[in-house]
Image (cartoon, one colour):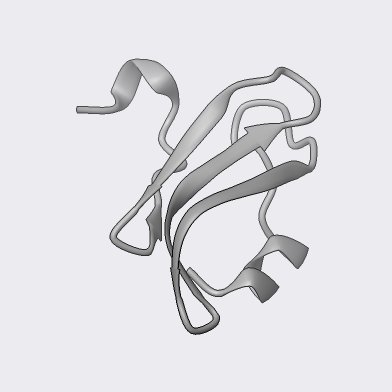
Length: 60
């Protein structure tokens, strides 16, 4: 995931802003980490550079 995507991403549940926490990067790409909603506090994982913004009950 590119960090500049943070400008357009929002929580799919409540539309609040997301905060980014990275655990692994390659250059400027975020490989693993989390996106946390500032409104409802749901946490969305980033795995293999792809943010999983599915609602928690629809994730695998």
